[in-house]
Length: 184
Image 1 (cartoon, rainbow, N blue to C red):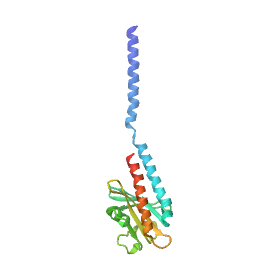
Image 2 (image 1 turned 180 degrees about the vertical axis):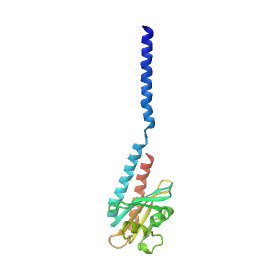
Image 3 (image 1 turned 135 degrees about the vertical axis):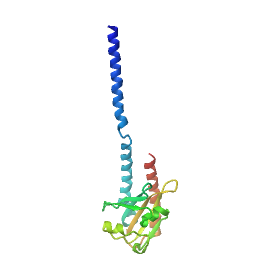
Image 4 (image 1 turned 90 degrees about the vertical axis):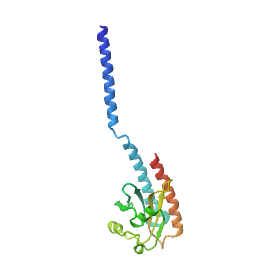
């Protein structure tokens, strides 16, 4: 009787341990980073929406965009605006935003079609006419450009140095937000 009880208990223990191992195996197969990536993506989307929804109000312009630098692909990507949800992808160095991403220098261009850095294909693709632009780099703590903020078509007149100061201030705030999303 003792042997039967001992074998029964041992069998139960082996069964429980095996069941636990099989259950934990499922955890190993689940992508544990998926929820973290979704959270970061949601935070980045919030930054996009804030810049696109309120950035143009601050500088009194028609549109604003945040271009994120994809270092691996050496390109910029952005949802163009809340009015036109096309995804724009540009090689780093192409267009004014690409120039800013490549050089890290801010740009104010009052007549973009006369500016050799301007890439008019985006206007053609989005059925939009750009007249003037200010564009600034978003830099991480190492000084690398991680994004570009762009304001398009000042409502009254041309962009000014005051607009450029606002842009630089916004870029520094966006840098803090992006770095906090990247670090977490």
